[in-house]
Amino acid sequence: MSQTNPLWENEIAKRRTFAIISHPDAGKTTMTEKLLYYGGAIREAGVVKGRKNSKHATSDWMEIEKKRGISVTSSAMDFEYKGHHINILDTPGHQDFSEDTYRTLTAADAAVMIIDVAKGVEAQTIKLFKVCRMRGIPIFTFVNKLDRHGKDPFELLEEIERVLGIRSYPMNWPIGMGNYFSGVFDRKKSRVELYQTDTQHEEISFFPVEGAEDPLIGERVGQELWQQLQDEISLLDVAGDEFDMELINKGELTPVFFGSAINNFGVQTFLDNFLQMAPPPSPKKSNLGMIDPYANFFSGFIFKIQANMNPAHRDRIAFLRICSGKFERGMSVKHVRLGKDIKLAQPVQFMAQDREIVDESYAGDVIGLFDPGIFQIGDTLSVGQSFEYEEMPHFSPEFFSKVMVKDAMKHKQFQKGIMQLTEEGTVQLFRTYPMEELIIGVVGVLQFEVLEYRLKAEYGVDIMLTRMPYQIARWLEGEKAALDALKNKTVTDRYGRPVMLFESEYQLRVAMEKYSSIKFHESSLGL
Ligand code: G4P
Image (cartoon, rainbow, N blue to C red):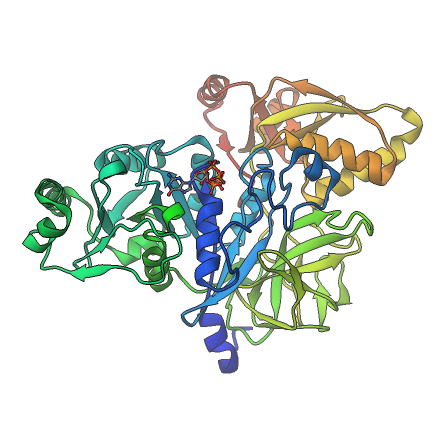
């Protein structure tokens, strides 16, 4: 199974597939626009979806989206830049935060973490970071909005280490901040990038220096800022972590860049460095061992299903991450779970604004497949092979509701709809014991609305949701007898695995102390 195809090597080696993780308003949309702009994928900044209430280029598919003026699910964008083929996986961030956001991270080979210099490490960043951490992918940090006054950079690095548990290596260092922001000092290349506010500039203004002590810096940015820079760089050199590519690859050390996305400052430098350090597609775990991306056959897994992108056709799109080999339009692939061969006739890729049909793609890419209802999250497709990629993990929901059908006569449609939407990954379903009541868990409250809307629109079923006070779910692992003894206190997920729900972190801690022989997992990863 490990035979590789040298013809595809270059194509696959030049792929970089990553997701941006951040808290709302840190600058993810702005950063994405600038990156697409460098790749020539868009002609002007300001067209990426997600811009609040403005240009909803790709996101007006669902009525709910229109109603709320937000995008419910994420997609992928790709572009070419300096010999690389870059795939950015979009991670929804605002109220539309959902399990999809987590699942998208399972399809990424690296993550870019954007932090607002004034706000530091925020709640949503922490959650997304944890998923990247579990997967051990490299994480690159961009500290944004240096044109505004914010936290002291040392304080920020300390916060990143304390809150996220990852060490950091500043690749460059800010010279001043806010009104005094003058540029960054590149530690590796020993050069200064002067701050310019021209948002569309093509030329970056660098000048080489002999280290931070070079008087040239003082001449350009003023004596005071130069002195401060020298003090800070010498402190960093003595007390900071060393650059270590191995630790970066394992996600234990994050290279940090400072800049101002809105002013296009530091973005290109970030991109150039990122491309040098970020990994190409890496081997992925399957039930038959690791699958090499350069292997001589096509394979991939579904990580997201997006419904009703086109309300007129009620179609669904299943997003597939290609993990090995080459994809060609019209190719027949094995749908491993169903044991059936299917033809992939009209796959699409997503640019900033349009869908376009793809003729060929390679390991690392993401394609959208029209789904007549045959795909589930985690499904493996492959040519000529019968293995399955690791099961897609579930992550702890944060909101829970009991769900009941209003009209008992519609029980059958209700069961069917809820099972299908669970398989699609819209919501998580838990059953109580011994009553077998149904509890829905979601990562973002909007998913309750999506569930209600879709059950009504697609299955003709009205439901009643009763909010429950839980905030946390933990998958339990332990001896069967110990788990059986807790049956009355647990619910089961859709695979029958025991899960315990908690109203607070405090309750969780108490339970962990009380049942110390049992492991409490934040996600079902690896269970
Ligand atoms: P998000 O996708 O992470 O939610 O953030 P987004 O890019 O939409 O940016 C959030 C706000 O922060 C936007 O302002 C954006 O213009 C601003 N912003 C992004 N990067 C920078 C930066 O480097 N410096 C400064 N000063 N601001 C930045 P907004 O007023 O909320 O929206 P808009 O009207 O500008 O679109």
